[in-house]
Length: 190
Image 1 (cartoon, helix red, strand yellow):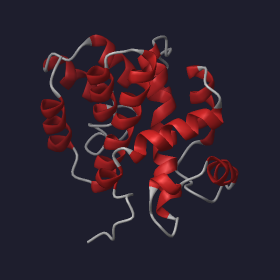
Image 2 (image 1 turned 120 degrees about the vertical axis):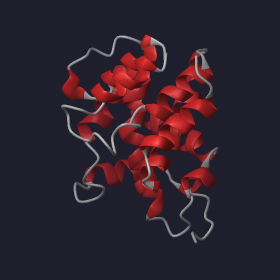
Image 3 (image 1 turned 90 degrees about the horizontal axis):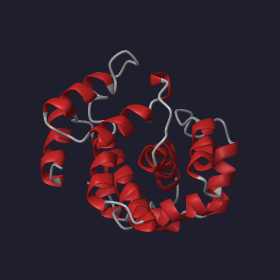
């Protein structure tokens, strides 16, 4: 398995967008937290979260995203279960999420982005101040964070076998651990 430093270098080689980098850090934190909870390999799961969209900025189409990334990851010697989970997080690849890691990645991806959007509109801009009930309310507001697929959020929790409210609370806690890296610690941005 590659180190986090190697994975981070790969991410930054392909991704320049600060928002995409922050999304990667958020999904990494969520995956690490779930790996701890489930007694899985925290480093492997974290790296999977960190790299799940590493190719998206350069290869954003369904014909390329995760396909080009999988090829790059294979060439670099990443484990097949990591590559599979990354490919399975994109519904258009039509791969069954048949591992716990793949289910967790899918469950964490859209919801992490949504939680960050909710935190951004809070006066404090602190992820730790986000409440489950406000997230549920925002999920019903189709005009808020339009790019987040609500069906993916609901399906992700269902496939992972967790209650949606508990899943939301769990991810808020996980993302709070890395709030400074996400720009969601309440500090004024430069």
